[in-house]
Length: 108
Image (cartoon, rainbow, N blue to C red):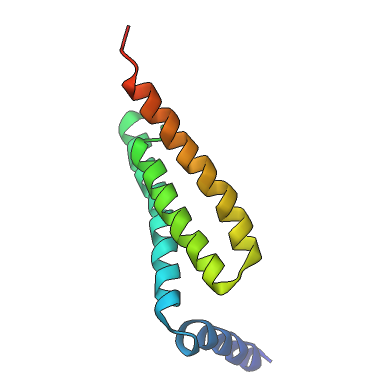
C-alpha cells in the first residue's frame, strides 16, 4: 500500500514538473518565486525595525509577481488564479499609487 502511494505521488510530480515542462511552467515558477520574495523583503525590514513594517519594495514584488501570476493564469486558463490575482494586482497598484502620492506631498 505504501509503495503504491509513493508511486502515485511520484507520478503526480513527474506529470507536473517533467511531462508538462515548457516556457509557461518556468514563467509560472519565476512568478511564484518573485511573489514569495516579497515576504522575505518584509521579514528583513521588520527585523531591522524591531516591529512589523511593509516596505515600498514589498508592493513592487507584489505587483510584479501578481502580474506575472495573472498572465500565467490567463495563458493556462485557470479561473481561480485569474480572479485572485486580478483583484490583488489592482490592490497592489493602488497601494503604490497612494505611497507615491504621499511622497510627493511636502512635509510640514
